[in-house]
Length: 351
Image (tube, rainbow, N blue to C red; front, side, top):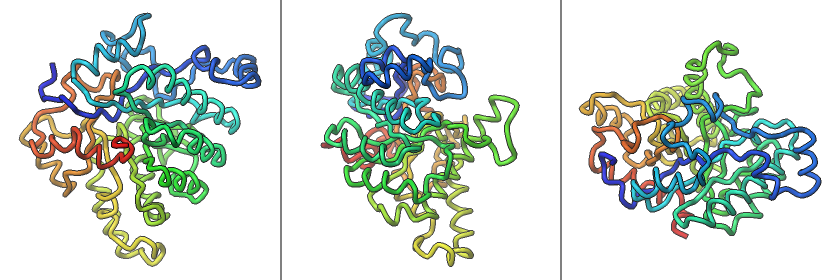
């Protein structure tokens, strides 16, 4: 069992198996059924390694032909006694160059989530997939599903074609704020650009490390371009980002802003303050010290106990079974990150 009492907690990062072509066909119209079949569009997962490999999933949590929802209920929802869990499908739709196919896959995936997951367990909520490479279609998808309060945020990646603050994406944020949806930024890439500022890597470990740079780039872009000024109710949730990269970003960006803010007059507050108001991080994978005595010291650098949101990252192998949180987190912080911070972040959870 878990070391901590997670009764009534809200899990902000739970992954259903990525839908395959056969899963999505019932939710596509005849035209797109023909397209995905003739073009053999099938594996729609978006990860640094395939779902079938051991580094991705705990072998004892594989459904092995059973109903994946029943496996999730058995392995996560019931033993942790969760109140709610947010499903995140990190889909290959993010990487498709065809903007119309991406829109069709996003729409079908959302309908699949509703039918096969949300309608079958009242504890489940979800992130909405929208095609960032097709902004008009993304807004249409938000409007189509806006009345379904089980969708609590829109989902994108930490490494995208353009920095997320760019104005081309602002209609998406306008629609999201209008309906109380937040912006979920999940570790991953659509592979439009090299993972690092120096080109492509040789090894998986390098790619994983580069995601931290991606998250920092996206948060800096959202602040510098004025997204949080224009849309003050919008929050960015960094999912599977880790934690320790945030205090250095807050310090360095605030320091540089003091000398360069003439370029960005709309950024009226220090970036560190904006980050504390508008940026949240999920707790898995937790990259703080192994020594429990050092954990509070590391968290103190955030100067806030409102930024962490509980997550298990089920079924990824980032922790030992149901030991979903490390030792050393102060009791007051733990109480907030398991539920209160999440409710404060996602207003639609209370709707």
